[in-house]
Length: 114
Image 1 (cartoon, rainbow, N blue to C red):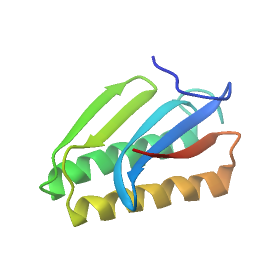
Image 2 (tube, helix red, strand yellow):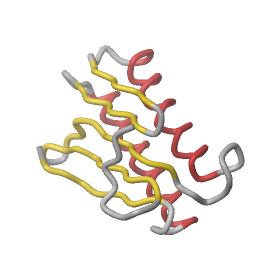
Image 3 (tube, one colour):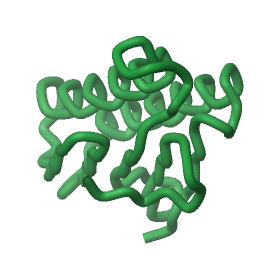
Image 4 (cartoon, rainbow, N blue to C red):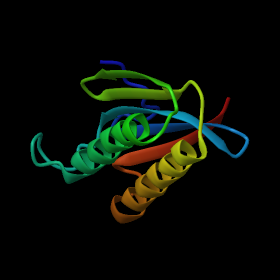
C-alpha cells in the first residue's frame, strides 16, 4: 500500500486543482477512528470517494484514470465537463463535512495546484 500521509495516522486526502477546476484526487491511509470493520470515518470517506468515481464515469462524458488498492485511491480526469466539476465539488464538500465532524486527527485534506 502506498501511504502519502505526512502524519503517522489518519486518512490523507489530496485534491488536485488547476485554478478553479478540479483535476482529481488521491486518498491514502486509514482513519484509525475505530477497529477495522467498524471505522465510520474510513467508511464515509471510502463511500463518497468510490461513489464520486462511479458517478463521474456513469453520469458524465468525462474520461478518467483510476488506480485503486487497499488504502489508496487515485482518480484523475483526462478531460472535464461541467457535470464532472459539480460532482468533484460535491466530493470536496463531503470531505470537508467529514473533517468538520471528526477532526484532523482522522482526516487531513490538502490542495495541490497542478
